[in-house]
Image (cartoon, rainbow over all chains, first blue to last red):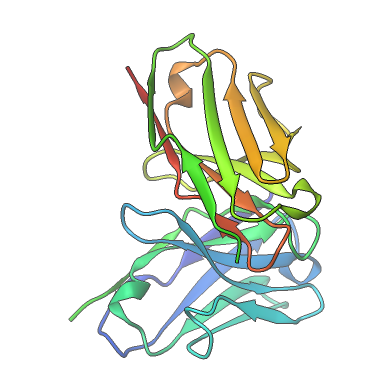
Length: 119
Length: 108
């Protein structure tokens, strides 16, 4: 079964850092395009970042320069390194598989991990 | 970036009724690259429709998508109790990909 499981969320102080992980099973993250999508409490969905099968990356303007997406092909894990965190970064962070093309729908989602930025 | 506006914000209907949800785009969506997702409380979104009208595997045929250009719809022909949830549209024809603000479908 193809599955994604996130971890690494928690309570972080403003200005702090956190690394999220997303373990994939049933497929290889290096062979697919992958993304992070977030959802602030009670709000809608916001695309955050993507890493493509060729290793290139892309970021939303709201996180550019602060967040870094990467992957460990040996462990089949996707990461999101988040630095200089702000209160407005508080959200459930989902990793999601992009179904076919670089710009495409998301066909598999993890269960999400909650990041709370607060003092 | 393309802004998606979903209407209505909340739709109150009874099981067995037909639901029509709308998604309007600020610019034409290239190749009709529009998807619909269902999200229940505490759960991740689930892909229902992509390419504006292609039903994802395992999705019941009471769900159908339509439209083109800047106006898209998701129709649920006969509501089942498990269909009451929040629905989001997403355009992926232009970067960055963007989502609508959601339509809450609630039991009347």
